[in-house]
Amino acid sequence: MEVEIDEKDLKDAGAEVFVDGGRRGIRIHGWLIETRRNSILNSSSVQQWEQKLETSHLPEMVFGENTLILKHLVSGTKIHFNAFDALSGWKQEALPPVEVPAAAKWKFRTKPSQQVILDYDYTFTTPYCGSGRIEIDNDSNGRDNSEETKTLNWEVCKEQIDVAALTSKEPILFYDEVVLYEDELADNGVSLLTVKVRVMPSSWFLLLRFWLRVDGVLVRLRETRMHFIFGGSTNPIILRDTCWRESTFQDLSAKGKPFESAAYNDDPSIISQRLPIVMHKTQKLVIPS
Image 1 (cartoon, rainbow, N blue to C red):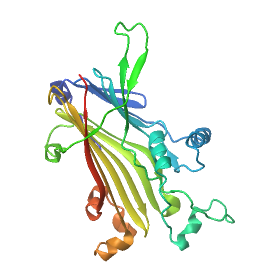
Image 2 (image 1 turned 90 degrees about the vertical axis):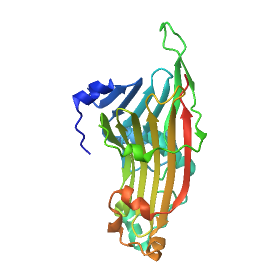
Image 3 (image 1 turned 180 degrees about the vertical axis):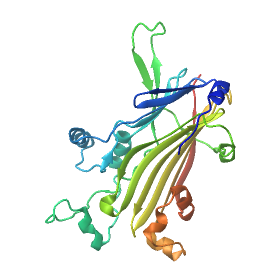
Image 4 (image 1 turned 120 degrees about the vertical axis):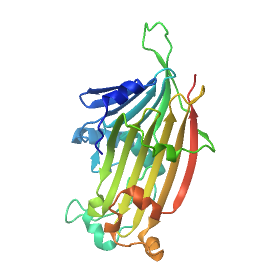
């Protein structure tokens, strides 16, 4: 998605966009929002990650230095998204492997004589919905860089993200999408984790999406949305909406939905309407004064 940024819109919003090598972002209403991009992990980094995660399996393409960071400068509240934490979530959840049709198992071989044993979650499904902490500078005079960190306290809530407000024709001041990891499941489908952010004069909004299609077997979609309204109240909040959907191809076919994998190559936002919800919750984070 290409977005043309109008300098007048930026000035009217009191925002400043910056680009620095692989970093790009925006400063607006006390927030620093930035994305960072780099190439996939090299073989040496892959080995290090495998050791830290205690696994011999990683997705084909891991963008280990790609990240989205949102930091509220006054409170020190920092929310960020990265592949390592997402894969830590995959390792901890340790879902049972999705069954692959016997006729397709050979695609997972790296050598012709190799016996294929899929005894791990080769889809890299993760419950990850972001990382975060509060970073507090203990020295108000700035004489040293000592920091105290606190975990974020997300509370279950009844408030909902105002989807209608997000569809209004408000100018976009900053937009970016970052891929965290991707795997084509040995040509049996796709496993993809991305995060995208959009900043408008009134708010910022992000979508973390894990999208999985195992051809002829399963479709799974796990999404986390966050929304923050600038200047909303004296105790501003971030709303976080997490929704998991999934279905087998067999169940989709029984409900009259297409069975062919090609029907699920489109935008997951469209496909999601065909998938039943298996988990949904809304939480809020109060930004400390």
